Amino acid sequence: MIGTVLLCPIIILQAIPDMREGELYGFIWCFIGLKWFVDGLWLTFSEKKQKEEERKENCVKRVYQYFFGKMAPVMKWAGEILLLLAVLCAVVLPPSLDWFVTVLLLAALIYTLVMYYIIRVEIKSDREKNGQD
Image 1 (cartoon, rainbow, N blue to C red):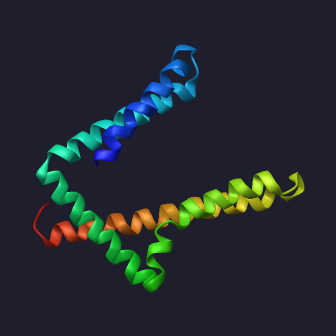
Image 2: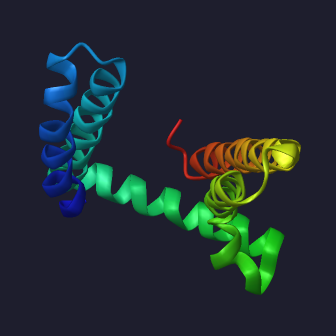
């Protein structure tokens, strides 16, 4: 929470020169930084939002624990690990193996989307059990 509020201005300040030059990624990073900053402020100062985030995090932990057991802490980062592995392979492997990098990227995307959907359903179910919706 606090880290987001402190680090996002750095992202925004680094994106401003790119924005001034008309670079699209400068606008994108500025937008992302502003969104994260506002979300961080909202979470920091709203007790209701903190409780809601805590419930969501508990749902996420339950889902990963159910599916992966002892490997849950690692599998929570599996999408990012696959993405990092794809980047490393793109740098190290010869261009003839670009198909392998593509497979890793698709695996990261599919894994992330599937887990996002499963977690979203679990959070919705948890809200209905607690009478929030």
